[in-house]
Amino acid sequence: MEITSRSAQLIAYETIREKIITGMYPGGMKLVEVQLAEEIGVSRTPVREAIRRLEQEGLIKRKKVIKPSEKDLRHMFQMRTLIESYAAKMAASYMTGERIANLRSSIQLAQTSETDGTVKANKEFHDLIVQECRNPIMIDTVDKMQAIIYLFSKTVVIHERPLLIEEHIKICDAIEQRQPELASKLMEEHLKADLEFTLTIVE
Image 1 (spheres, rainbow, N blue to C red):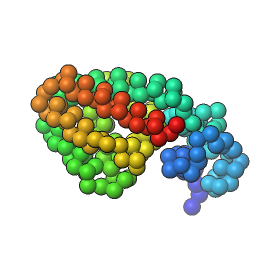
Image 2: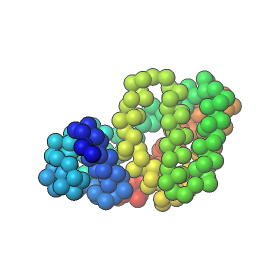
Image 3: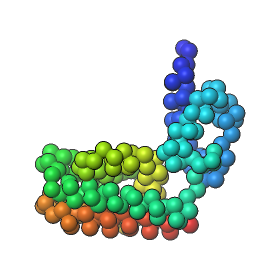
């Protein structure tokens, strides 16, 4: 079956992204279009487009896999914390009972799953809360950081950061009990703990 240019670009994008996220392409590795095209089985054009897209997501910088400095990580978490703590505050004011139940389900799934399932459940927990900020610019900003957020999430799950799930439970409790300021404060503390833990792993 003939591969269209759009599907070739998607194949290249998903292949390169997956290899960065799984660590097969480590931080600092230079990405050479010719080699990637040969490895993936597509032409150079879709590889070039895939690299451009991954640069927009922050996984690649100057055709090298990102190896963020402590300063880079702190800047990213600062933006994420501003958005998610606000979103948690909004969730405590407006989140419906049905969506709160979904929040509880994501926590239960994280408790009972293997690594990949826990990472996915944690993402769902944060995504549900981010949606509550009801600000498309904020939501889009977090969406653009999703690939890097995934890397952090996998790090804290694999290395078993203490109290990770317990903090999610407390945030959910504050949202369900309609305590906006507490929910916001707990989310801020939660993300700060994620950052500090991640820094001890990647340094």
